[in-house]
Image 1: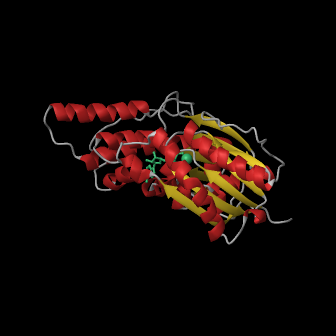
Image 2: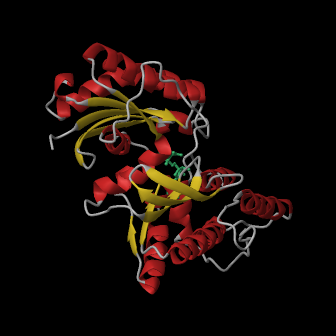
Image 3: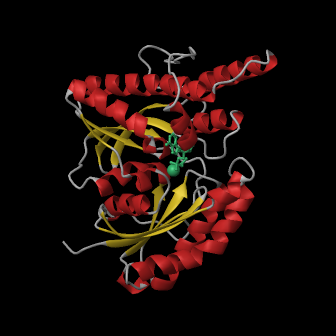
Length: 336
Ligand code: KG4
Ligand code: ZN
């Protein structure tokens, strides 16, 4: 079969990224321009600022991705873009750029679900990985347990009913005076703390449910911090981080292990921003070794937002004949 090279654009949140990927798995170029330094000043992503920064960066980043790939638009087979979920104004910048490129070059357009992209990030890192598998998708906006039956066929088995996993990390970090995004810092301090020091709740919901809830845990951490402050007692942030993270992992790992057993599936993919957490990776690997399962994590740079994963997802849709119209619109609340 002829090689398929897809140029993909990702602007759903605070990274402007453009990538070119061959046959869904081979990265030719993957440029990621992060806005984190700007958003840090405000303690989180400011949507209006994000849109403006995407707009300023996007043309240069498309050029850079082509330049690094030693290619022109003529060498590309299709243009892919994240259509949702994400911030409406941020998504619009990417979609407008992709439509313009598709219209000008007459190359097909493929609109991609960002969350599907996060799953596909693992295909790039692990060339042997194929469905079926279970995917634990833990990002800043979503938390999903998914049965991936085939490249374009998946069933959501569980999801968060309130806060996403990464969102809980960011909120706890903020209350501890750490900068956005909080995940990497909470991970760092957790390594130095005692995970038995404070008893935070593990919210399992119904015993048969694969859904998640992190808002109770977040509130418990905030209440603990407030009560310590009121009493004038010292807060050991290492212990708070360690105990918060332990509570998160206990729930994630319990439900993931249960689903793998129930579905009799031995392959697990963990993806999304929180999968960049080394401690989570070690704990998941331990659970997999105990059960004879195999776990796959994307390499770090592909755990958080990037366009290579969007190109990979677009490839599997493209070879299935999926095309988007030029009337493609943003879907900020798109679900899997
Ligand atoms: O997938 P992602 O880049 O963006 C969304 O699609 O939401 O995820 C970003 C989230 C943030 O909440 C960030 O704090 C979290 O991933 N994150 C981490 C780590 N690195 C990033 N959470 C825990 N530990 C980390 N090392
Ligand atoms: Zn993401």
